[in-house]
Length: 284
Ligand code: PMP
Image (cartoon, rainbow, N blue to C red; front, top):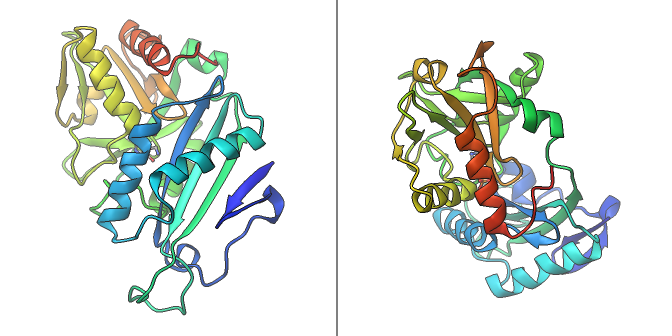
């Protein structure tokens, strides 16, 4: 495996940043995960646009121009011979003596890694996955794809300990915000697709945006609005979306069956449409 660190391609085991990198010290950095499916980068433009937005919100300069980053992304994929993989990109504010203040002349660090994956198992796709709800204990700038992920780490661990695949985080008002590393969707009894609108309270998933566009093209009725846990229990279908799960059916929530307890048709349709848009067959 080959990684990229600040201008050099290095063996994965030797890839490292300095102990005074602000990403390490303060989680002062942002990231993206771009999926490689059948050798193709999925939703590359969307992920680069969001990276630019996250950097802008934190006033971190681009480490290289986006066009150069695209070249590096392809080179990392190529050097890893990756067909189905997760391409990870992280930008930190850079190395500076430990001080909360921004350094005067930041030299942002850029790291890319690539890991081959099968995404999900065929069984997870065929049966759907269980999720559990947990309180959302994160900060109020969840729209920034920050590497400060401790709340999501704790949420996912709670899911694992409950035998679930993902944790759906819930705000104090009882509405579902999103998964620990995915956006949350339901289909109401009337067949309306519902997901929370983009705001500071969720990360606006790139897969989420593509699925909404595809739903529009397919004539599937949808609403962007918050929904409660109770509504999710009563939903006809539920699913999650992310770069690595595409659209993955959720068939149990907090131990209750969703709908008839099997993956629903809208999730299947949208996953298929997403794969067609990416231009590769479903890798699972
Ligand atoms: N929400 C959160 C909190 C996430 O971490 C992710 C995945 N990084 C998503 C949503 C899904 O975003 P995307 O579709 O861009 O992978």
